Amino acid sequence: MLTPLPAPRSAPAVRSAVTDAYARLTEALPVLTVTELSEDTPLPATDGWVTAAALAENAAALDAFLAWDDEQVLRDNAKKGRPDVIAGFGLHRYAWPACLLFTAPWFLHRRVPRYPVSHVSYDRTRGPMSLAVRPGSFACLPGDPAAALPGAYTVPDEEALRAELRDAVAEHMEPLLASFGPRMRRRGRALWGMVTDEIVEGIWYVAGLLGEHEKRRAEHALELLLPGTTKPYAGSPAFRVLTGPDGGSLLTRDRVSCCMYYTLDPEDTCATCPRTCDSARIAKLTAVAAS
Image (tube, rainbow, N blue to C red):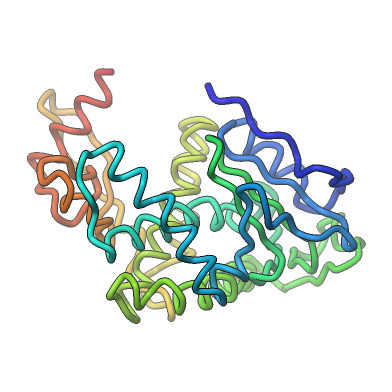
């Protein structure tokens, strides 16, 4: 198991309404760490770190970020990836952990933080994924003890909190999609379909690490969060059950988007990829279960 990186140098310890959620996230998934910074601590932006704002606004910063993916693909596959595929890999590798900044506190404690791109920095260059964030406002339900904390605002019910989560993720991701999208040769629904997948698969995976009950709870929560009619998102979790060779049930889902890894290896597709037929899904899921 990879050892989590230490907090950004000189960053004082900060506790917020979402600290416990991030601690539990890292406990379940040690390759992802989240450091909360004080209001007067600058976001790290050197030595492997890049701010989300730079990825959204600075073409040179985005070039440098995607160079890492370009080199990794060449090293691991002995072939160059298409520029649009590399851009898609880069966005996925940022968006998957970034969406957990929002979904983990919502799923674990019913709290939704707000992080515009100016409040997040990311480092994936030394193994573990590390995020640094500057806490700000957050939504919670009436009766939550955290409602008394600075920056808290209450919403009336669970559906209102789900709306806050959808809005918070969209606020963060929209400027990044505007930056990555042209390089990916994707627009509109295709980009938001990818964000839909990142939201679903990130918390679904983490919930599975927390136990079978939490995984089932996550599936129900995600179906309510993304019923397929919530703009700008495209699609729904689309969970469904296949029958395995022994007659048992195999849970899968239909991704909205394709990561395009098939352009490097046509035989290696995800079990949830829209390009993967059900017989291949059953074979992949059965092999995973057997291992």
